[in-house]
Image 1 (cartoon, rainbow, N blue to C red):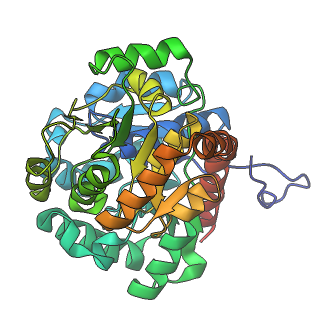
Image 2: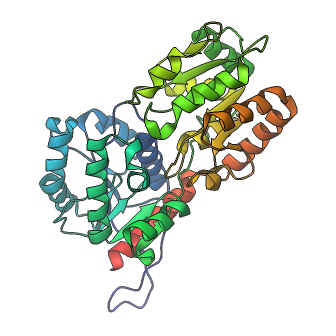
Length: 390
């Protein structure tokens, strides 16, 4: 609980937390990084006894009622499953729900915000790579995110970012007021993401059709920012000619990087690439923990949740020095530049060094334990309090 000033005409100090309406209507069905952020945060806010209300899609009503039993959960109209309808509802329906539940603050966890909310709004800005490298994003999505971010910088009572790197870039690129930006690192659900047992690793390997064969793991959208074509080319450099060459497993629910297929077309026929599509949460622990290396050589992230989740599963992780990733990985991961040659050299070194991979895996699990949704919720609650007091 966050202490506030005494109520008028009362001698005793009382603890008052603003009632917060979290807008979860943008959470996708596949529970990608946004879903894991919102779900983890809401559950942690509930455990912290936050005065909480949640707006969501109808398909998520029972989920949030279970995650936060004391919260007021309000489902929006069915049409908001479609993005244009959701954005329109955000402008009129969300302020109405805020009034209905008596919210003191609205938390918009995905860039955009109602223009006339009626109460202070806290907006999460996940990253600013849309401004740094717009060419690696879908042009339509980039235009929307950039416009929403600029609006949030102008109008939001507080801005929450998941890393110091994102805060610094917002100040540099958008001239955002640093005194209105709060850093709240993401957490990781340690009940789900922890080092798996041998049986769990074997089960995932069998489902992938690998049956114990070593593999390099990737998880994420196939979009240019994730740097998958260079990962493919680097992996080929690292394993071509090895007697028992590790396979490359690209787990992804989709994407739009046209270069991926071109890179795959150049893979020598004796090497094996698997594309299992979307992996359920129940498989991720065994997938990460069973990999020889988890390779996530992104060109930039606002935080890097898959890096943290892989670390929490005791994986040897290879990522880049870009943006927030060193804040997450620290000394517990291996780093590479994002070009194919560098990725290949780094992978080759890790594949050949069992001791190095073991040391990284141990260090990664220990560092990941420091990132909790409880700590993230505390930082969010402090931001809500600041917004309510403005």
